[in-house]
Image 1 (cartoon, rainbow, N blue to C red):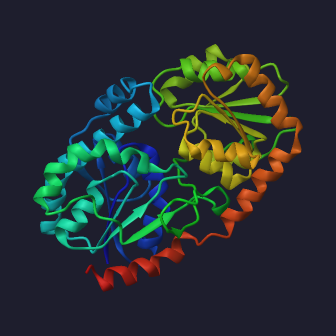
Image 2 (image 1 turned 120 degrees about the vertical axis):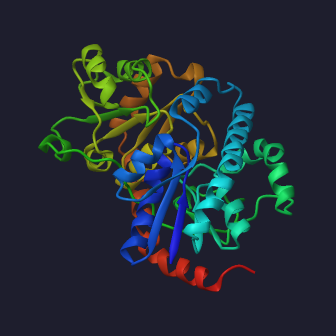
Image 3 (image 1 turned 180 degrees about the vertical axis):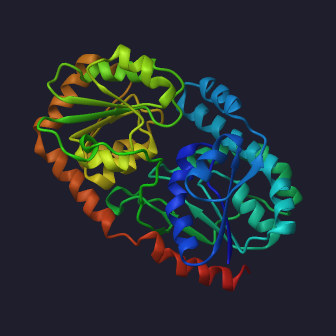
Length: 371
């Protein structure tokens, strides 16, 4: 079986799809993963064959991120429109790929619309694999007008539904109104580095990990987040890209700064402070670690429901003052219920079907075909 993955246009979607892609390869199937220029080295680093699908550059991605509307609804529409344009840019390239390497099944991320459109064009089943707990349907309205010409050309009224929809959200945090999906256990897959003992040994004082995710371009955001949690008697670890390590180390000398494998580090942490990124959130959940989400980039239901469950505190806008962040840190460290609720979610995730258990479902789907 030949399987094409087209997860998304940034590093995290690549990492989120890697466990299933690797499980398919381990089962003897041939797997390619498509992406824009920026993510091709990330795909190769995960041990998967990368295929370029669109001409989008990292500079264009950074420009888009910096120009995002502040209004959440307008922002979601803008994101949907960008992903729709990527779909249009990539369809012909993917069709050319299929002339020489025709996949039997196509796997795409939530709003990576090129996956179901391409699968429809060549007549093979499509699989939708969510990156994290975020409900990406909120981006769909922004894609409608951009995709209309392509849909009409394909004889479609809307983007086709997937033949198999895989969801990694723990059932206790799922949206009851969401479509029926096949659960799959989320697994960590991220870049690694030579380990030092402190990374996997829990210290004798609380450890707080601070990160702003994989798209960070400058030090200000991380420095401000670190300022909020210093002086509390905890060990501070700041996750940052290598090009920001030197300036951040000078600005926050009391912290450990670097690009650390979060799947290794997270189990040793007492708290993870971040901006609501999906990869950080899912790693914290998998490790049973409480979260403090500061001014999340996407303040959606996925963020709120974790608060309601009792495994996190979220501070938005004016709520995210240094004083409020300090209070939130102290509350989470002192109130053991946050750790208990986080561990409940980790236990729940461990009971979900592993990626290897999804492989037979995909084999059956490919053998059955469409229609």
